[in-house]
Length: 154
Image (cartoon, rainbow, N blue to C red; front, top):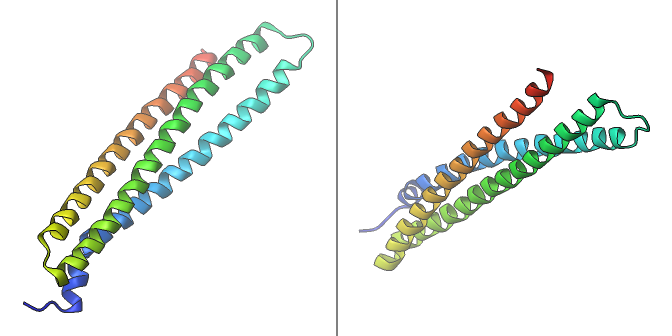
């Protein structure tokens, strides 16, 4: 059976949609990454100002400890965001390979290439799931950091 170019494109569409979806996930995580890094920089700047005070008040010492705790937790959060972005990027690579294998298979009718396209698509989906789990964990960590800030006000 002969395949037209339209059928090839249709067969390659599912991995292509997943590539687009992962692109959006990466964009969102990169935005979070920038926000967290910026927050670390602001807290470090505030920490330096407090550290150089000659006469520290009790509130200054308390704030310095609070900032240190937040920075440590934000550092963990940045690592999780990095891992999520890596997982999504790896998934994109898998979907690209799956899409290429689907296109090649339509013309070669190779069971090996057909199997590889399925394997790469499934690995890509599994990697997206891993990225989503990292993103969920990052959200929980973000909430805990906010709680640290709120507890200081109490």
